[in-house]
Length: 456
Image 1: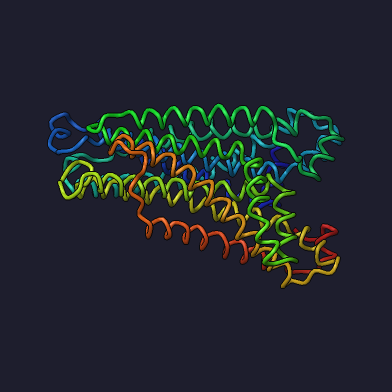
Image 2: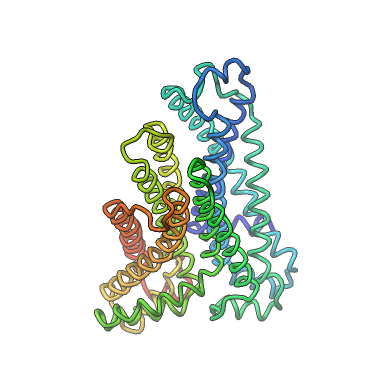
C-alpha cells in the first residue's frame, strides 16, 4: 500500500504539492508559537517582568489560536481535494479486491509521508520565525530583552504530533465514502459528481454555523473596556463561519453560481454559458476553488474593518486599541493570516485547473479552440472570484458587525472603502491569472493522446 501511495503522489503532483504546502504552514505555525511559549516558560520570572504589555505567552496564545486554526482549515481543505482526485484510482483498487481498510491505508500513508517530509523544513522555518518575531517584540518593548528562544526540539515534536493527528483524522473522514461503498459503485461514483450535498454534511454546517453565531454574540456582548477580547472572539467567530462555508460549500457555490451566472451568459453567450454549466455541474470542484478565496476575503476583511472601527471609535485619543504597538501587532496578524489564505488559494486553483486536462482535450476534440477554452476559463475564474468574494464578504460583515456592537454600540462598523477594494483586487489578481496560466499549460499537447490517458 505504501508503494501505491507513493505512486499516486508522483502521478498527482499538483494536488499533493498543495497538501504539502498546507502541512508545511501548519508545522511552521505550531513551531513558531510553541517556541514563543517555550521562551516565556524557560525565562526567569525577573526577566519576564522587565517588559511592558500583555506578556509573550498572551501574545503567542492570541496569535496562535487563530493562525493554527486557519492553518488546519487549509490542511483539511487541501487534503479533501487531494483525496477526491484519487477517487478513480481508489475505486479501481477496490475492484481488484482491495479492502476498505487497505484503501484508507493508502490515504493515511500519503499523509504520514508528506508530514514527515515537511516537518524538518517547517521546524527550521518556524524556529527562525519565532526568533525574528521575538526580536521584533523586544525592539518595541513588548518582550523583555533577556528572553531567548530555547534550542529544544519539543515545539517541533509537538507540531509533528498535532499535525499528524489532524491529518489522519481528516483523511479518515475524507476517505470514508470511497471506502464504504461497493467497488462497482465506487468506480461509477468516481467518474461523476453527486448533485447533492450529504445530509450529514449539511447538518454539520448548520451546527458549525450556530457555533459561529454564538461566538459573534459573545463578541457583541463584551463591555467596551474588553475590546481586545471582543476582537479575538469576532475573529475566531469568522474562522468558524468560514468552516461552515466550507462544509456547505457545494450547496452554497451551486446556488450562487446559478444566481451570478446569468449576467455572464448574457455577456458571453458561448464561453459564458459553458463556464456557467461547468461550475454548476461540478459544485464540489467549484467549492474547492471558492473556499480559499472566501477565506482570504473573510479574514482580511474582518481584520481590516475591525481595526478601522476601533480606530474610529477611539478617535484621536491614544488607547490600547490605537497605540502604535497594537496597530503593529494587528498588522502582523493580518499579514500572517493573508499569507496562509493566499497560499491556499494559489495551491488549490493550480491543482483544480491542472486536473482538467482530459476535460479540455475532450472539448477540443468536439471542435473547441484553445482561445475559446481560455475565454471559458476567464469566465469561470471571474465567477469563482465573485462567489468567493460574496461568501467572504458575508462572513467579514457578520464578524465586523458583532465587533462594532461591542465597541460603538452600533452594528454598523467603520468601513474602509479603499482597503476593501484592495482586498477584492487582491483576490482577483490571485484567482484570474492563476487559473489562466495553469489553463494555458493544461490545454497544450495532442487532445487524442490526453483523452486516451497517454499523458497526465
